[in-house]
Structures are given as C-alpha cells and as structure tokens.
Length: 249
Image 1 (cartoon, rainbow, N blue to C red):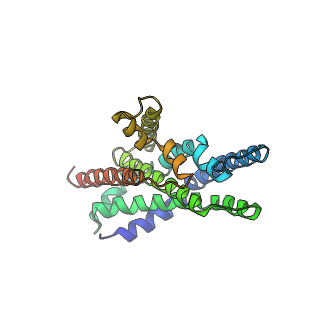
Image 2 (image 1 turned 30 degrees about the vertical axis):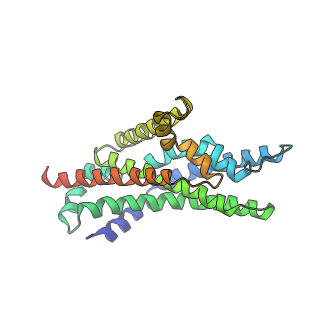
Image 3 (image 1 turned 135 degrees about the horizontal axis):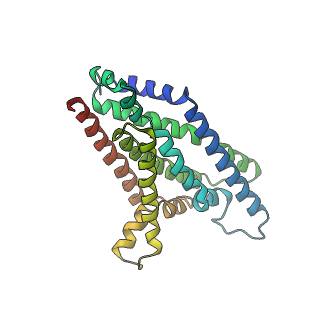
C-alpha cells in the first residue's frame, strides 16, 4: 500500500507530541494502578483463596474498572485521527498525495493500536511485582493480555470508523462511546436470556465481561478471536470506503 509507512509515522508522532496521549496515559495508569492495588490489598487480607482467584485473574477478569477504562481510552485515542484531518483541511493534501485510502486508514489505525499497546506496557510491572513475591502463571498472563489486545483492537477500529464519519472530534468520541456501550449492554444479555437459547449464545460471544473472565483463567475461545477479528475488519473496511468517497465528494 502506497504511503502506509509515512502515514503511520506521521500519526504516531502526532499522537504523542500533543497532550492527549499523555493525559489518557496518566488517567489510565492511575485508574488501573488503584484498581490493582485494591485487589492485591483485598486478597492479602483474605483467609483463603480459590485456585483461580489470584491478583492477575481478579484484575483482568473481575475488575469493572478495566472495561470502563477501555470505554474511555479507545474513543479518546481515535476521535481525532480522521475528523481532525477533515476539520483542518489537511485531508485534501493527503488524498492528492500518492497515498491510497487503504493506506490512510490502516496507517492511522495501526498508529492508534501502537499507542494503545504502549499505554498497556507499563502494567507489566504489576506482573513483575507479583513475580518477586510469589509464582506467576504465565499462560494466564498471556491469555489475559491477548484478551485486552483483541478487545482494544476491535474498539479502536470502531473509533476510526466513527472519526471518518464526522468533522467533530467530540461527535466521534460520543459515537464511539455509544457503540461500545451498546456492545457492553448487549453482552450483559447472557445473564438475562434463558440458557441454551440462541440469543444467550450471541450475547455471550459479544460479552467483553465473560470474555475477560474466561481469558483471565487462561481459557482462549476461538469464537472470541473470530469476533474480535470481525470487529476489526468490518469497521476498517467501511472506513476505507468512506475515505474513498471523499475523493469524489
């Protein structure tokens, strides 16, 4: 794809030279740090622990703060990637350059995904701390971070699509947050519908809560990976079509 590397480098730099990424990183790490500290403090005072109720399992699989942080982090990272280009008028120069619409969308998307991974990287210190105080189940850690990566990748793709559909960063932020909140609410349906019903199976597949709970125990369900891949591919495909329409609109 012509121009992909240039778009990627430009977007990564633009994300980190502005206060946005640093503010999101600070808020994210504060929330996750307090959440992890609270979990460790609670478990340290517990008389008995279940086999699958360690700090890592509890943080990834039982902390609502992790999911809520994603509902804020992903829209915040993606809200400006295409909306700001349209508002400032720089998108015309970008599209007249030897850069394909697919390169524009994928370059910007991978830049947001790189930023997302960089924001999660410091949380590996939690695992290092636990390793110095006891044993760490590395397959559980790997599966848990895989769940976080898959969920974030899908959420960021939704954000890129929303950003391509408006010139307002605020509107893109709200649109993304509403879609992600809708997915969260749809997933709660697994606790509402009757067992073995089709609706319950659909909701269980979409549910980020049950997904993280499973992966925090080291269980990797292929259906989760297929859903994450679909949630990445479909919005990005639509975003490419939107960007292509700008050349003719």
